[in-house]
Length: 133
Ligand SMILES: [Zn+2]
Ligand SMILES: [Zn+2]
Picture 1 (spheres, rainbow, N blue to C red):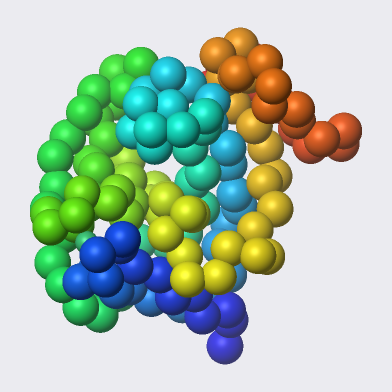
Picture 2 (tube, rainbow, N blue to C red; picture 1 turned 180 degrees about the vertical axis):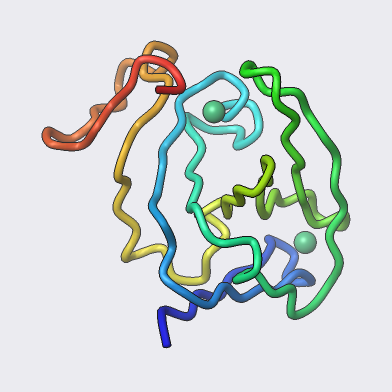
């Protein structure tokens, strides 16, 4: 019995559940994440793909090529466009801002800090990498 994490999209059609302890939370300041989120950075909660269960609604996916050259699958609600998760190979990361409760989130690492907006301050003691590490 691990943690049970519920989340969903902005319009409420998509609801999902993740069962089990996540592997970690990464903040990414790259320009792709800024564009995707329409904000200053992206938050990715790494989970086991088998732990993800879609409980209502449907997801649409598309693929993008990462800077690393690998393909990344992006899943989103087709009604409201909220990005729900990314999948690269065997790895899966939930867009952590879609969780019903975000109060417990604490980033383990910050990536692409060379693209970071200057007013974002990474706390002391949190790992940071100038690029994708
Ligand atoms: Zn939606
Ligand atoms: Zn990024």
